[in-house]
Amino acid sequence: MPSSTAQPEATSPKRVRITDLRYPVLTESQQQTWAYAEANPITLSEDSVLSAAREQTGLGDFGPDDFRERLALWLDEIDADPNRSPVSRMVTHSACTRYAANRLRVLDVLRRHPEIHDEEIVAPIIVVGLPRSGTTHLLNLMSADSRFRSLPLWESQEPVPFAGDELGVDGVDPRLLRSQERWNQMQAKSPLVAAMHPMTPEHIHEELELESLDFSSYNFEWMSSMAPRWRDYYLAHDQRPHYEFIKTMLKLLQWQRGPNRWILKCPQHLEQLGPLMDTFPDATVVMTHRDPVSVVQSAATMVGYGARMNFHELDLDAVCDYWIDRVSRLLDAGTRDLALIPDERRVDVYFDQFMANDIGTVEHIYNRAGLEMTEQARGEISAYMSSHKRGSGGQVVYDLRADFGREPAELRTRFANYFDAFPVKVEVL
Image 1: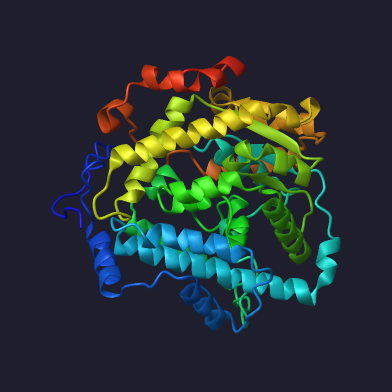
Image 2 (image 1 turned 60 degrees about the vertical axis):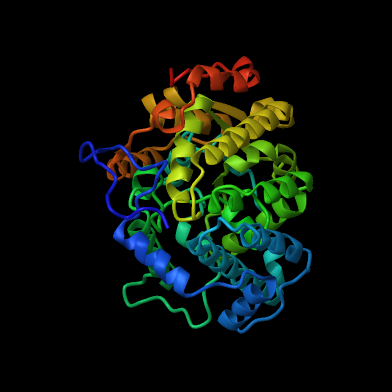
């Protein structure tokens, strides 16, 4: 277990410098989580996950069996690594069990209500761009417009209510309350998460959470800090069946409640533009652009901070190398397949311009998507911005040189093709 005698240094109430990124110092809550996981060892096997899901739901039909190979690979990648911590094992088992249980509930509803398949997903707006490039902020801004259907975190975590779930006397969905409890636990376990990537229950989430019920997507790489075996398997397989799974999930959610024009986003789509456009051929695709060196600096810090609980001995350089490679792969694929998006339905959004003019950027997107920026929509977006100030949870200081020993100019050469294709402003010098 990493050291536990000091705490990360905060240079001010708003600016946080993580001084123990390379040599983690666990908080008291993290120590308790580690001790609990160590005292309650987990068996990582397909049978243990699926048995737990059956017991939770009282259901037993998982549908087509092809998902089992993917689930087994997820579990074995963690199980076979002696450096994986008991916390990593516990979190992996818990997440896979939740996905399997949700799969059971979803397939049960689909069997009982075949009319769900008749729902149509029409002209969604889909935000595509690197992680840490403004995609989340842009998604949440547009989701404030009540004309759109979006995916709040609480609903993505539990797309179908549990048997016996009833709204409380205050009208609150029990799924939201359970999501709040998960967020409370996450903040206690990883206190800087809120500053880097807020995950409150009402926060609008990525549809890859829905794809995880089919045990695909690159989400597992984030969940486990890095997963080279899964990455290679996932990239070697056609993802169209899993994008169709996402579409079916959207139909189910739309059938449960409207409205029926979706706003979606996921960085994964950058390397899956073929499956994306085949599945949603009438989509307007919003492509965000940011200096990939800044993206690496931010993503590697966030993943590195989270990884302190995933390994007995953290190799921060390996984490950084993994996500440099991952960002490079995303950009190479997105640049290669750009022509798959019809020009008239692609909107390029540059990070610096977006940060300088939030609502103006949204209005530009609406114009391209044939949607009017009404006064009501403008008011709803403005109200969201007023109640969700950027950086209100604190601002983490990112430093590629000091924390990772990497020179920004040298790293930037890795992304030369991307800079040739798009006039992206250099941020990290």
